[in-house]
Length: 306
Ligand SMILES: [Zn+2]
Image 1 (cartoon, rainbow, N blue to C red):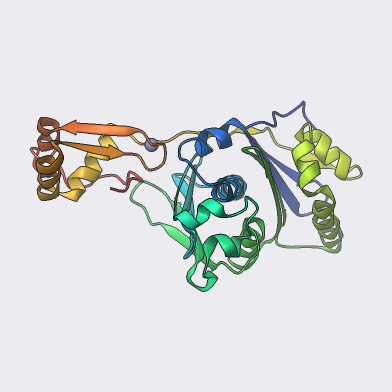
Image 2: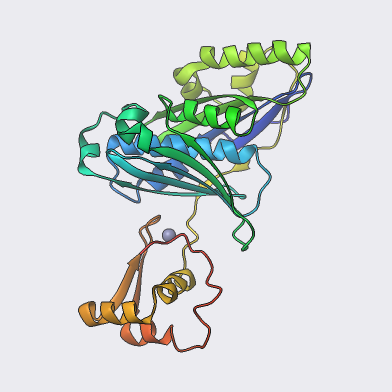
């Protein structure tokens, strides 16, 4: 295996050279803390969002895509919505909507408690090319005890790839491990897969959080396997909101609505729901948005709600 791979805010993929089994490890430290610092998330939400951040990054490791991977958990209880976006360069951002019941949940509240009525809750995984091209989406019911088992279920049923995922978090950092058996399995693949998926159980949360690096973790748990580790890729918190995107949202909102806001407030203020950055348009600036003919057409999707 190549030299030490950074393990903080990085994604590392690996393959078993002699079996159709692959995996990925992610560790989000500053990226996780920076994202969670954007909003006053109750502990149970912070943990769920951290898990969804790691799970989304691991999902991204399995895909070739441009644009954004958007993972949304819609609940009918304390959690209304958790959203994580991960782009092809592993820029991450997240947001959530919750009610006051979430404040008193224990940090390790199971998924069913967070989402409330699981029959009315769901997880959707969307690939948005962000270029106007077709959006693809997979949806699964929330019939799992944890985000890790939920994503496993999605990968196994929707993507038809046997998958195991381990997610472990503490103090605003999260680590995740994904193992997958690729199609076309032979007897050797079966044996390796059985061993690899059993080893995930042995690794467990504590070992995953304590591991000093990708190489040491893999060498310690798979000493007899020929593993190829690919160069790690950096992940980070980065929101792609901008004045232009907010302007597009206001144009879609329409002149009448914007005039109503101006009449009530004297200016138009929009706060990015992901990074909390405020954008302000004074009256002249807000009206200027509607002066160019056709400006309302072709507005890019900005990931902003108003
Ligand atoms: Zn933003």
